[in-house]
Structure formats: structure tokens, C-alpha cells
Image (cartoon, rainbow, N blue to C red; front, side, top):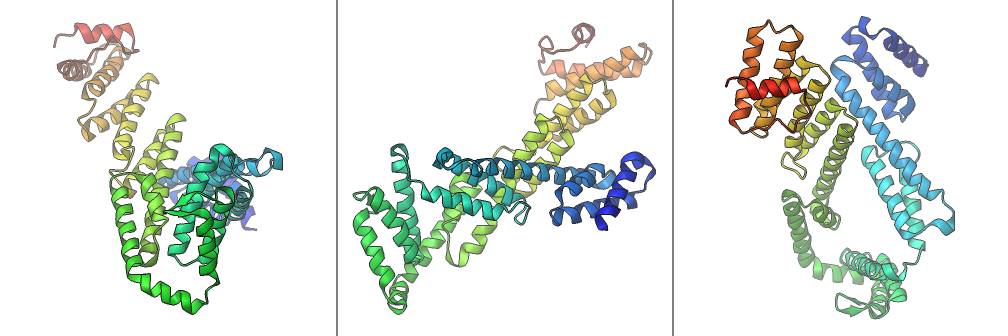
Length: 392
């Protein structure tokens, strides 16, 4: 019943959106969010695409999330649908990353991303690394053994250390041969729980110092924008700092999502959406990698120049002026295009508005003072001539 009501609302707004109030748009947006939360992505997308008014930008973000989620799931499933002889570690790694990306967008999303992630990981674990991958896998099994042993998860430590021993028995893991390490983990796993507890108590102070050191190193990497290192360290944090580490992981994941979405929006010339995504990244970490604040401002410059070439001179003036006020960068370029926009309107309106010409001259003067060369700009010869010959 609710889906039918939603469909009617969408149809009305699609055909006569201009006649409906903001209250109607609010209700449509609420329906769309509810459909999204219920994993009814087809209904949700239709609804969000029909939203106008104050929720329009937020609706576009939901549409991007839905598209990105579906793409990630489709790419991951395309790997799982291959026959067994077509699967290898690399393409299963790719599938894992896609399902993890889908989960970062919506952890309880449709098409069972959690189940498919576990399936991809299980298939990957069954594959023996090739000779080329052996060294990398040996390092990984060694690290997983050490991590499990530090957390006193000795059954897991047995699994990883003995896999390492089977593949590379002489491999040195933390100064111990893999074969001996496997046997040592088996002995620890066989101990009674109270014996392991005594051993854990003896190590507890050192373990606490170690996890605190890990968390400090991870946050330092985060602050210096080394997100790859930060993610590796954060996933190793245990104990009292584990909750805070997970929060940092979520920040990094969200930041990277918004930055990627902004890039995709720019490629599609969806400037408002790109700007909104950059601003979301700024809220997470204003000085993060890729300089989201600078990129958001550059959207104004790019949108202003694009509007100029489309003949939308009012929009060009608005976005270019906004960029000029936001930063001191590329002022020669922005003042040239502000002048070009104004002189174009002057010509189109018959050359009668002297105040418009004076405004163009003032902008061109600022561009020339900063040494701007217009010869490599794809503008009409008439504008180039005006720029070169005006009396400054």
C-alpha cells in the first residue's frame, strides 16, 4: 500500500512538480528515505530523482550512494559467478574490496553484501598462492599469527602458523621458523584456559602499552594523511582503544567515499553534486588528502567557466565571483573570464550598456596586472581583440 502511495506521489511530482509546495517535496523526500532504509532501492531512486527544493542536493547524494552501491555489488558478484577454474587470488581480492565498499555505503543493504563478502573470503582462503605470491602470503600469514597470539586467540594462531608452515616451513616469522612456530601455537592452544590466563596476566602490562602505542601511531598517521598506514594500524588495535579505532576507520572510509563520489560527479559535469561531496569530506577532515576544501572551491571556478561557454553569463558571473572571494589562487584566470562574460553580454546587448563595458574593463585590467595571457584560451577572436586592445 505504501509503495502505491509513493508511486502516485512520484507520478504527480514528475509531471507537475512546479505546482507543488515544499511540504509536498518534504513528504516525498521522507518516503524516499524510508524506501532507502527498507532497501527498496528502485523505489527510492525514483523518488529521490523527483525531489526538488531544499532537499534536492541531499536527494542527489542518496542517488549517488544507490548507484555506487549497485555498481560495487554487481562487480563483486561478477567474480563470484565465475567458474572455479576462473577464480584466483587477485580477482577474489577485487571482489572482497567491492563488497567492503558496498558495506561502507550501507551495512545492511540489499543482495546480502555480508554473506557474499564471507563467501569471497572463504574461496580466497581455499586457493594456494602462486610462486609469485608466496612471499607476500608468507608475510601475511606470519602477521596474522602474531596478531592472533597477542590477542590470545591460539586456535586462530594455529591455523595461520600451520598454513605458513605447510607453504614455507623454513620461513622466519619474528625470528622463529614457521614449522617451530606452528608447533608452539598448537601447544599453547592445548593448554587449559586457566594456564593461558596466567600467561596472559603476565603479559598484560606489555600488551596494554603495545596497543596504546599502536593507536598513537595510527592517529599520527591519520593526522599526517597517511590513510593507508592508519588503516593498517587501526585494524590491529585491541583493548580499550578498539572502539575509538573503529571510529577512525569509519571516518577514513566515509572520507574516501565522498572524495571518490565527488570525482565521479565532476566527470559527469554534475557540479552541485561534486561540491556537496567535497563539502562532506571537508566536514570529516578539512585538511585531508586531496585537499577537499580547495577542490570544492575549484568546482566554482570550473562551473563558472563552463557556464560562460554555455552562454549562461549570469551563472558564470555568480560562480566565478564566488571563487574570486574564496581564494587568492588563479585570480588572473578568474578575472579574465569574468571580463569575458561581461564583454560578451555587452556585445550581445548591442554595445549600448557602457557600465557593463566598464565592468569588463575592470576585470580585464586585474587579469592583465597579473600577467594573464589570453592567446591560449578558446574564446572568440572578438573577445581576444577586446582584451588586447582595450585601454587599461
